Length: 278
Image (cartoon, helix red, strand yellow):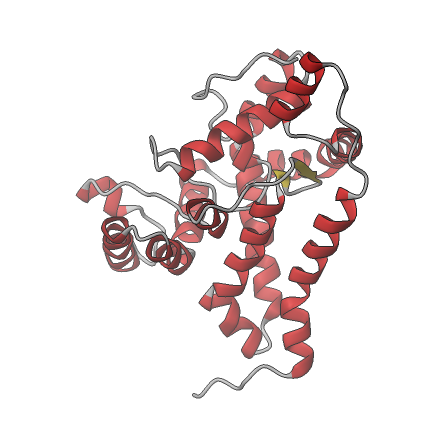
């Protein structure tokens, strides 16, 4: 059955994310703090690259309240009701659905070898792996997962990350990664299909399930980070930057995240040396 083209209203809805991110990136920058005058303070300020720290901390505190009363309880309930093998299957299937986005970013970065690996994994997991529920490529063929996103692609093209940002629910980010997040959503062929066939509800359901699963996976990790951090905000900022540097450089593979949540900053917290809070 041929797919109908997007109506003007659907196109507006689909691309409004870009406008929202542009407003955010431009609007919040107007609140940048003035750099310290003394050399030592100026050096620390530039190293942190967090000119919006007062605003970011306020948003972080709001996120913490939201997490305490909604996100964390929902994730805990999910782990109690859904057995771990089933949660692993959900995570694997969600990861498999994002393969076209990973492949596009592999190619845009000129990583043809990794693109070939992505295609192999998709072919194996979509068939032998029962539509991606089982990570057969890794489990039986020794082909581990990797992810690529447009934020990483922009970094390989030389785009600067811009100032550090903390966005409630999304978590640690920066203007480059926010643009990447919107671009990945826009280039996802499944999203295009669901939009074109008036099934937008499935997009929201997929995003919500991915966020729920990612938060559930981080219950212990985030609790431990919060308990052991002198400044939880600074710790997450540091872990996020170290993780993104690893991802951009295609260093040691880590358990991939399928959701643009705080998991991007902390799902490997125990594996990364976290710099002490300043």
